[in-house]
Image 1: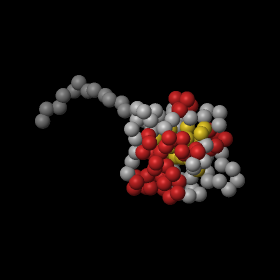
Image 2: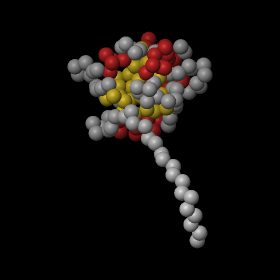
Image 3: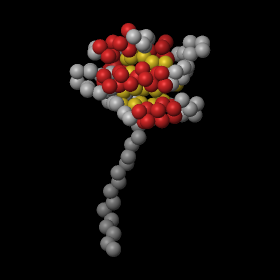
Image 4: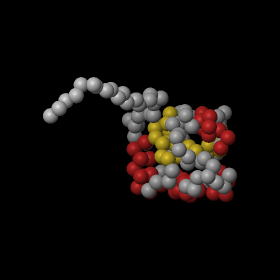
Length: 147
């Protein structure tokens, strides 16, 4: 774990969650925001932008004070939780409403992208990410059309 990721817990108090504790974290206590950001770090030695996201996360939490809660997903739990939270790329921030993911922000992004997307995810009508798989069917016709 990099020093910047460790600081998220040590300095900012963001909990580290795993398979056994993520649901308890995502269920807001009385008066807490129903939305949360889960930080899937990936291996910071292999992913240069992990530390960049670690620097941005506290700034996002200041900007969205009281509207989001934050946690770091334990590295050993990432493989088990990534499908549930629709993470395909590390690092990623996952925005949730209650237990459900409403958006995934992979890698480092422009500040305006974070602001726009995180604001949109706060909308009570923002759809949760489903388990449906988008499929494209390709058909072939042997009929030839000559102009």
